[in-house]
Length: 110
Image (cartoon, rainbow, N blue to C red):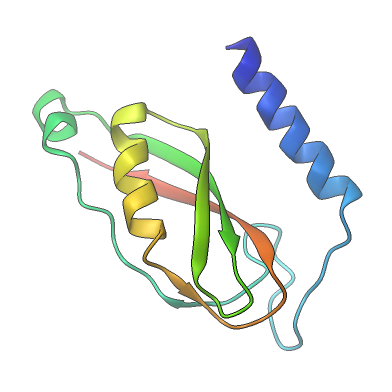
């Protein structure tokens, strides 16, 4: 739990200290600096369905200049749901722009 807290604090500090780059005509939301062009919905894991597990998964997606997702880093959420979220977000496509880190939250409801 302490290591998760340390990661969250480190991410928060890195966002507050890093320069914010926004393309024109995009919303200045903290949760999404780049427009998502294509989303792939996560497949609800069978194990999560069986036990009625729901919740929110938070990740940071590293997005390349061409809009493809290079890497998905977990921030918080159930490990059972995390894999499904990472698999889906890896297939997302963002609008082209400067390489960035995008915060993403996915909600799973049983």
